[in-house]
Amino acid sequence: HSPLLVSTMSNTSASNYILDNYAPTDRLAVVIKYQRGGLIQRIGRAEKVAAPDIQGWLQRENTRGGNVYSSVNALNPDAAGRTRGDVGEIRRQRPPPYRS
Image (tube, rainbow, N blue to C red; front, side, top):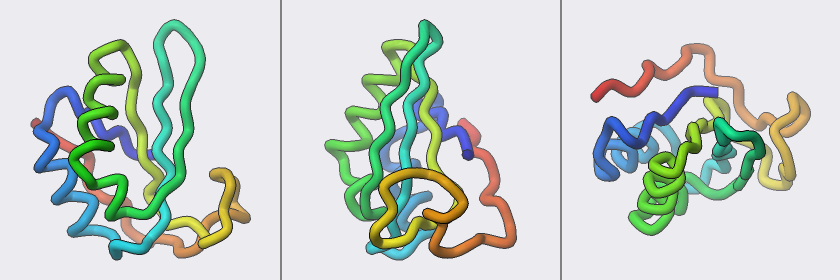
């Protein structure tokens, strides 16, 4: 997974990154892992993950101590998780990490 580090970047930058690197209908996994334990996983289309409401939610969860990660590879249309079998398209080059 690539850390999104939403606390160090604007929502517009994260949204642009997603829309620049994925087709709007690509399915992505977003994971929030909390320092105190626990995690949240959501799978959705890139256009939805890039939407202001989702980016705002990710930023709020990051502020609350959640580390936000996104899948590098797009998932199959029917993926329910993040296993190898759920990967639809393998990206040969890892996207660069986000920088503030």
